[in-house]
Structures are given as structure tokens and as C-alpha cells.
Length: 264
Length: 255
Image (cartoon, rainbow over all chains, first blue to last red; front, side, top):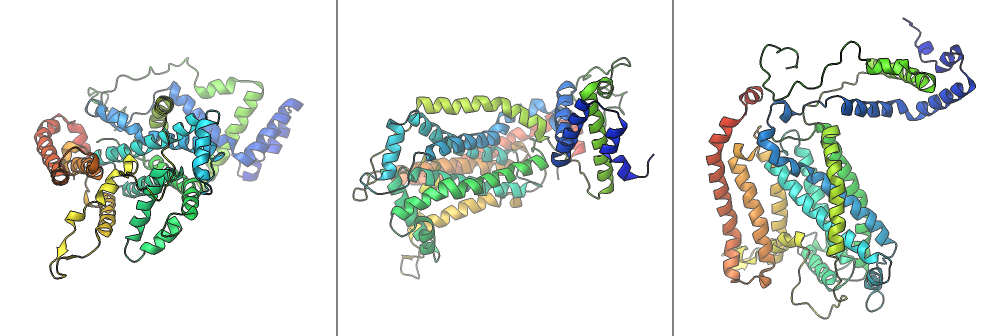
């Protein structure tokens, strides 16, 4: 047993002792160089773990261990809803980024540039109609999945200790999802968008004390204008993506740390 | 309770004998790796060293690794969900291909459409804006309302979201399943029904029924659904509780 730790970790000395061929020493030098910087060994361990786990028996889950499967099988499909909403979010993000290449949030002209760019996407752009369709449907599906996910969490009591904070985070996320949807359907600047925006302005104005300030902040004034469209655009493509993606990561991270709440 | 210490008892955890134990001839994974030659052998040796290095550092640190007593996200949940994920994405593409959205007339501030509606998922919020008839009129103010109907509607939104948010702090204890907590399940079902009825109230100009009746039903139906749920779950409870694994309850007694 060596008490000299430095010697133990001295990979270069170890290599010298081994009488390696040039190929081997090059390989090892590169490997050690990469591993010092990226700790490949940690990830290798993950892969190995996975490999062993598919070859050996997976550890038993709570329901398996206590033979509760026959009681709870009907819950299991509902446990995928959180993943579905994340997946729909990713699809929406990718298709949205592509749509963003062609969309311009401007109100100049009649009909507005924004409306025209949507028309261009839907009629002239190769696959544009499909792209917009995918974006819209993934958004709809995401909202639906998020609602159902919340119901699943409620009815399986998954919000209970120690998961209260994740429930609160979920409330924030579902609200932001709806804000995402709202800012999104304002962007085409058609009749629906305009009058939905009108209702939004009136709702913010009716908030006591802070109403006018909120209307200014979110809608850029008390009537709909270029500023409104531009703010909705920035909210939709810049602010919300960063915030929501971060929150989703934290939300899933907490689930990862705490484990899935099984129906007990 | 580990798998080894109850060899005499019949196994009651529902598991079979599991995998066949390796016999003495079967090389372990470590042995297989030690037998390799060339670069893979070197890789193995280096990683063994690196791992030992990590282990030493870990032994030195005061960080405590805790076991999490729950369902592992990886690999159980992740592997299962990934297989469904491909199907799900396909479903989105199918929906998009078969039912593409169309765009309405361009925005025209001078012509208000007959029907203004948000997307379906905001109907509930839109419905809450139409609670004017419930806004109390204060007698002292001479029949005036304390706040504008619209303010009242916005406040209703805040109340609904707030109530949902504080659920974990109201409903505590180890009960997980609807049959174990009939009251909260009834609240949940009432809430779902209310979300639907308030959405129908939001589209009241499209509903082929008397608006006053619709308004009353909006608030009556959730309570009816809640009571029915409560009664049904209370009735089911006896039977379900009997069926539940007794060993499980000895392990985690309901608080």
C-alpha cells in the first residue's frame, strides 16, 4: 500500500513503466489528455451501468416489489404526459425557429407585413403550410398534455411532501405555457389576434392600481399598435423560451432527484 | 428487507426467481475486461486507475450521497417514455398533415367580429371574466358594485390559480389514491367539471340554450359531480382497502 498519493496518480510515470509501443502511448496520452479535461471516465461509467442494467435484471420499483401492479396499471399511461408536453415543446421550438426565418412582426402596410409574411409562409414557401401546421398543433398538444399532466399529478397525490415546490413550479409553468399560446396567436395579426389582444389590454387595464403600468409593459400602450405586436413577438421568441426552458429543466431536474411519485 | 434474508418464507413480493445466478465457470464482467488485450486493455487499466483516484477523492470529501426512496427516473421512466415518444411525435405530424390551421381575415380595428374567442385552453379564463352577475352589490354604496365586473373577473382568475397552488399545503398525509382521499378527489372532479362548464359559459353565444340556465348549471354541475364522486369513492373504499397489500400497509401506515 502506497502512502504517496502523488505517485499513485502519476499517470505519466505509470506509462513509462509499461514499455508501450508508439501507437499505445499515443492513444493513452490522448485518452489521458481528454479525460483530464472532460472526465470521460464518469460518462463511461454511465454507459457501463446502462449496459449492465439491460443485461442483468433491473432493480424493482416500489409497485413491483410489493406486487401492486394489478392495482395501478391504469395509471401508467398517464405517467408519460409530462414527457409528452416536453416533447411537444421541443417540436414547437424547432418548427418555431424555422418559422422565425420568414416571419416579420411589423404592422406596416394593409394588410400588415406580419399578416403578409404568414400568408407567404402558407402559400409560397416550400413546406411552409406544413411547418406552420406542425408549430400550431404541437403548441395545442403541449397545452393539452400539460393540463392532463396536472390532473394526473393531482389525482395520484403526487404533489404531496416532498414535492410541493415542484407543484408550485408546475403552476408557474402551466401559466407560462398559456402565455406562450396567447402571445403566439397574436402574431399573425388577423382578426382573432387583434381582438384577443384587445381583450388582453382591457384585462390588464382592469387590474387595480398596477393596471396601466402592466398594460404599458406588456402591450406597449392602451391601444393596440406596432409596439404591441413587437412586444408579443419578443415575449414569444426571446423571453419566454429562455424562461420556460430553464423552468422545465429545473422541473424535470427535481423529478429526477426526487424520483417519480408512484401511485401508492 | 433484502432478497436474501427470508429464504424460508414463500416470496410474497410477486417477483419470480429472477435471473439465473452465474455459476463458477461464468466469467464476471471484470474478468472479461481483464482478459482483453491491446488498446482496450490499456483503456481498462487506465479507467481502473482513474476510478480509484475518484474513489479516493470521494472518500476524502464530506459530501453525503443519499438514497432516494422512489421510482427511478432513469432508466425506468426514461426508457419507457422514449419508446412512446416516437409514436407521439408522429401523432403531432399526423394531426398537422390532416388538419392544418387556416388564417382569418387580417386585423381590422373598425369591424368588431360577432364572436370573439381565444384559443380553447383560455376559455376557462375567458369564462371567469363573465361572472358579472355574481359580483356582489353593496347595499351601503346604494346598490353600487364594489369593483368593476372586469376587475372581478381578473380577480377570479387569480383566485382560481391561487387555490390550485396551495393544494399541497392543505392536503397533507400519505394518502395517494383517489379511494384513499374521497374528499380531495371530489374537489378535483368538481374542478374539472367547473373548467368545462365555465368554458361553455365563455362560448355562451354559441350554446343553443338559455343563458340564465347555462349560468346556473355552470355552478351547479361541479357540485353535483363532486358529490357523486365522493359518494362513489366512499362506497368503493371498503373493497379497495381490503384488497390492498397488508404488508405494504404495515410498512407505510397511513398517517
